[in-house]
Length: 380
Figure (spheres, rainbow, N blue to C red):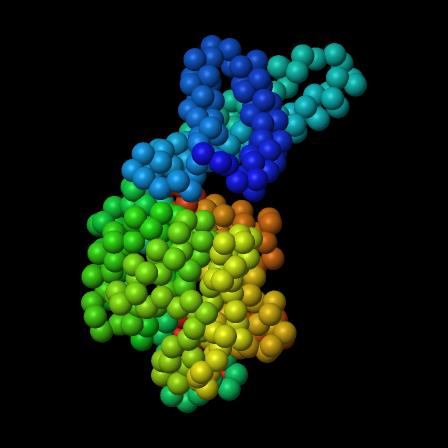
């Protein structure tokens, strides 16, 4: 089997980035907690079992589907732990360097208790984060005041779902609850803002089965996300053609004098074979004179929306980093992204980002419980 050069480059870059974190974390843990050697070695092995399978991630079939579902979460959890633990060790090392200028002191004396505290916090946070990812379902209502909104669109309610990442371990009962809750909110339309499934088109039927709880009266729209692009987006598009979900791929649909403009995902531009599915705002806007509302998985389109003076963009993708404090409007994603949650305004344009209704890989959402957002449009 020929491995694409892009995959080889990814493996080389990922190894160069993540292997040092693995080395520092494993070595430090074994040095500071020698009596836990067995547990540490087992965790490190399980957390790195995914690496040999990375070149085959896009391979279809039941075996690789199971590999991704079982080993992927362990890899992501261990890698996240190793990065954070290494950061703690670096801080401890700086403290040790300062302390030894006054008096020689072993590194273990400085680092052992911070390491124990880190482990205790981790063991407390993990079950809380798992519970918050799998059980609660937050509903938020947001009024957005829009200049020049048509009178017929006044009070329009759009329910936002996103990042469902339907996969092997997604519970059908959870999908039923999500869509039943959406139906109870009585929106004029519901939109799934990308990442409907976790890469593999095999899970589209499971998603469609869950939508039956929404009922036929509420229009259900969706756009593609980066995880559809990582899999086989053509199969996803074909599977949804004529289904309960109206998938908008660089096209629009009318709703109460509004033009809901569904863009494809920018991830298509990173893959030569997906270039035909790249976002095309001009094409998506054509053929309808309604008031435009942009639907996009990634918030990247907002820069173009600002340049064109488009009034409102609805996006997702960030998950709020799956960790944050809503009351402070702080999320882990905000450390890396300018727009990561909630409502933003730039010039005459506004952007709303939902933090998502599901989770990616690891069922862990600490402080960022899954949400359904109802956007209610009001005339300014």
